[in-house]
Image 1: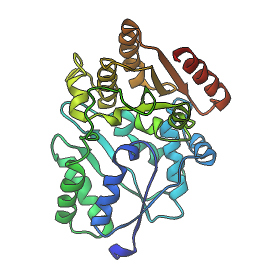
Image 2 (image 1 turned 180 degrees about the vertical axis):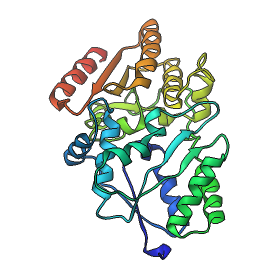
Image 3 (image 1 turned 120 degrees about the horizontal axis):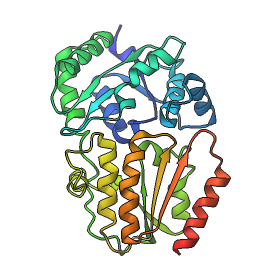
Length: 305
């Protein structure tokens, strides 16, 4: 199979909202054509829900729907297995086992490309997964490994180069939106939360506005103690923002039954209460209606004006 004739599908879900641009660059540098699934919609959500058990969290259900939307337009679908992206932390179990869930949940035969991500070390299983991907795509293993180091390893543990020391001087009242990137940046799952806040005249700040090092520095006393890096990301962002003056309020958008959020939310809410900062937790699943969502949001915004 010629490299130029292969198309790899990249699902627009989960870690795509953090590292999608790096993976697109990775395949482009290898001469592989990529196609990214369309934005989340009701059809993608419903297809994903059918594939998964009720206990599966909403973002994983949606990811299954994105997989199905790519099966007829791509030769292979890229499903990374994220084990660790920083220090002693591990990724959420759903990211560790995502590739296995896809294989067991989707009855239709799906050809996948799987690469294990562990930036602490290029361990044996990581190299083995790259070797298998290289063989499948007909690419030299050493070339793929080199591109992987340059494109992925050097980038996946870094946040946006913004260092917050104040939140004044913006065009609107500052409000913080916390949550996993695949929730707050997926316009369908978030029900357009960020745009709704901007339409109300707020300046929106998220964990992505903070450099990864800053978030870790401000995540005390949980640095090197909190098991999942996605939890530490939100803890660090919350503790950074709540120590800045001028914050109007904090909103945490969470998928129903998220195990990581069940821990981080407790710590964040307690500290915000002590500081007297208004806080709203919005929990969504596939049954959440936008009317009820908007009612809760508007009531909260009326309270903090």
